[in-house]
Image (tube, rainbow, N blue to C red):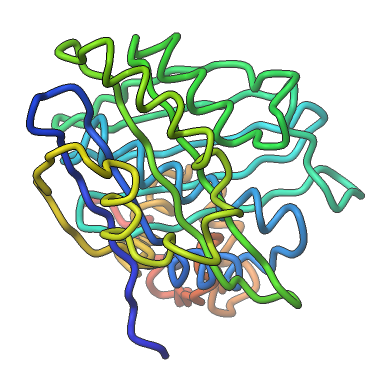
Length: 286
Ligand SMILES: [Zn+2]
């Protein structure tokens, strides 16, 4: 496996007007797309959502677990998890008998898990007119309406001959200190940064380069630099724990044919086996 170069950077302009996050997520997205067997536009949107989840966590909740779910307007969903340790994973669920998910008019659900385990949840409708960028449009709308944060962002994922060649993005958050003239300057500049697709050929493969170009001429400080990678949080222990929530009759049903129970993780495909003895052990009173 190629060495992972995916990283996310957090910077802030010295005068305090902008917080900027830039990310390269190419290897992470490639692995997640492969694990889900996603192709075409679905794979592209999935890669964008995974990138958006990383950017969102780094902007709003670096220490928390974040999950983003895009619910299609006519069924299907894309799920992206981003964790504080840099690991990310996701799920692609297509609508029945379809190979595409209609995002415009669907919903974006954003969740972060608080340290004590309760979940902060918000939802917005994906704008009907997304200007060809439904994931960016949905997350910007979410940040504005649910979190009262004004931001500009772009995420992108390029797939050539079925292979993810580039994925990444940025989010630029406007802070209360922002001076009017800097806002004008940035608004004009971002016209050139509207589509990640246009940036992939030049600067977007390096998060440093993207950050320095976004903030060109504005003194800034890089506050954080961390790794991003595809990894799953599944384990035998978690599989057993999820089985433990089943009722007695369901467990007896699972062990009725006397063969090990085979389960595959939906996120990464890892296979887990649970023997009839282990299942029986769950029935014993403790
Ligand atoms: Zn897994």
